[in-house]
Image 1 (cartoon, rainbow, N blue to C red):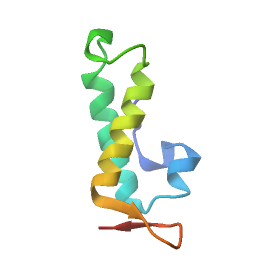
Image 2: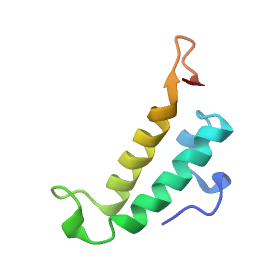
Image 3: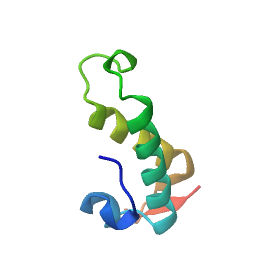
Length: 75
């Protein structure tokens, strides 16, 4: 279930990440969704959606970090 826009992202993503980080999340999720369509490309028994979420969060964490104020800030 790729996301067409940031408004389609889950509430937990939209409500916590800045707009740019949401774009990163969306693009990484959609890319992983395509890349890991084949179960043989995934580790263990993880679903396509689980892998895509992990990839998306990792992409966000490459450019953003959660600050002491509990908000995400660009590194």
